[in-house]
Image (cartoon, rainbow, N blue to C red):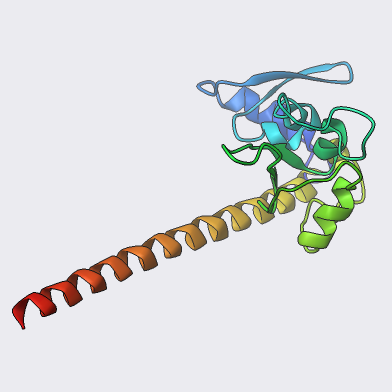
Amino acid sequence: TWGGPGKPFWWLFFLLSRCSLKAQATIMFLGEAKLRVPPGLELYLKENRLATFTEWPFVSDCSCTADRMAEAGFIHCPIENASDVAQCFICFKELEGWEPDDDPVEEHRKHSPKCAFLALQKDICDLTIQEFMKLRKERVKNLIGTEVKHTMIEMEKYAKLIHEKIDDLRLIRH
């Protein structure tokens, strides 16, 4: 038996890695245990979030170092004109314009006060399977919300373009 919902969630990684033979997995070390982290779950581990900060502009002598950003739930996702864009892997809130004295947790809380990652009262590796699945549910819900929002924006742009074409045709006919 797998031990039920009271087991720490790393046990779920172990179970999923044994069940998912096709999964390309990242090897991670949690204490003494060598675990395969199934694809899609990598960002739940701070080490993997930290690995995204290779080109982070704030290295030392500041509050928003890469380590503190990863600890606050952020991944680094720079774009052409903004090298300091960071996004929470749970609530998907993107923040940019970081100042050296910005506290990543406080900025995260200020801009996304209901983020489930911020509500965690213990280390993510100490979550039970039930707690982990609740966090994962919040992440998926936020991901779907983000995708719907982007799709709506694209559809509105397309509708505007269609209306402009219709107006152009009306002008040609008159």
